[in-house]
Length: 283
Ligand code: PMP
Image 1 (spheres, rainbow, N blue to C red):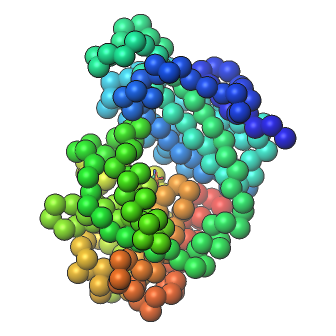
Image 2: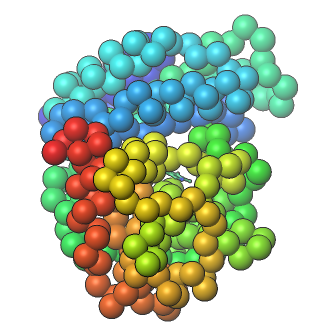
Image 3: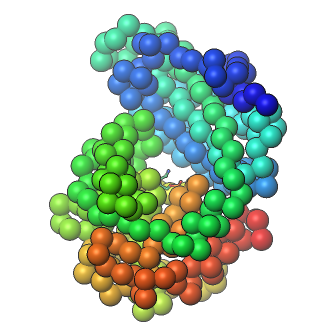
């Protein structure tokens, strides 16, 4: 069964799909992206993700080449054409193809690429039941990580440090010793029945999963405090989590050499995961 991707207005065979060598995404990381989860063939949190894409485009002064309805149309087509039951959609918009020059090119059409990937249904559940390990490392990113740009070398290097330390995710530490977020997720701890996560600012990506989870937990009257936390807080945390479009709510059982709780998936993990699934109408 051949896979199909969307490249600049055309559906093409995944193996043959390509962009030009002078695409500004390739040369300058001059573009933005979004990742949407698909569960049971349903697109999750579409509005949140597409609105954030528009916000990112605005921040880099790029006008969307497609209307919101067109993105949705093509994404849904790719879900169907690739028979995606569980998986993800990767959508990228760059400033287009032009002779290499730092300043914005004139009269160039932005490039749009959409890729659909299947993920085995039990992959998440297996990972959830084990919990994940986290390695902390310095946050070396630029000052506008609230924009979801293609400029991903610092998180790539951070994730590699995590992997080389037999961990699944990196938590990034700012100059004051506080965790900003994960390399590709938001970071949370639970302490004395209060969920703690860093407030939204230029120094974290305002996660769509984070927003949906907070909304649903507030409805359940759970205590949430949006404040920065550090390694000292982590040492006394009862549970810890990451959230992202593809990891949903994922329990953390170890941060560096610190065992979280008893080093096993905590008792609230399932509750938070279910609360998120309810929020996106999957329960
Ligand atoms: N922070 C960073 C740095 C990320 O890359 C991601 C994943 N996109 C997140 C947070 C989580 O965001 P979302 O829940 O919207 O996937």
